[in-house]
Length: 99
Image 1 (cartoon, rainbow, N blue to C red):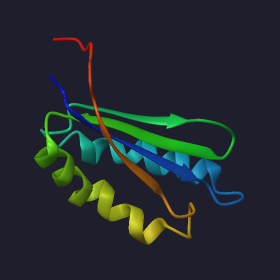
Image 2 (cartoon, one colour; image 1 turned 135 degrees about the vertical axis):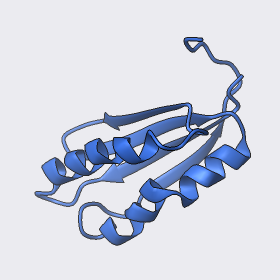
Image 3 (spheres, rainbow, N blue to C red; image 1 turned 135 degrees about the horizontal axis):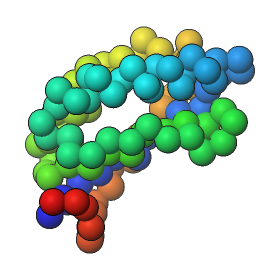
Image 4 (cartoon, helix red, strand yellow; image 1 turned 45 degrees about the vertical axis):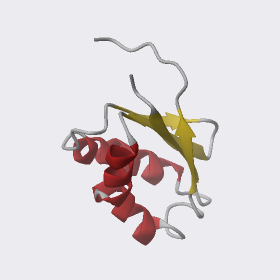
């Protein structure tokens, strides 16, 4: 069972919505190289609000993801593409995923 998740909310700076969407699209290739990231979704809540939802088997995999390429790319893009990211660590209490 998957036990850990992240929900990251990103608010695009004015006029940077398309660039943020592209940033998230490109991030997929980095995440594909992370064996501990079981599922990863780039999402859009509204015109300028984006996010990432990803799931992990344990804290170790989640921490590795946060320290990985996408996590490192958030810093230099904060204040350029989006305001300060809101990162929520989530505990999963039940799941249904393809086997």
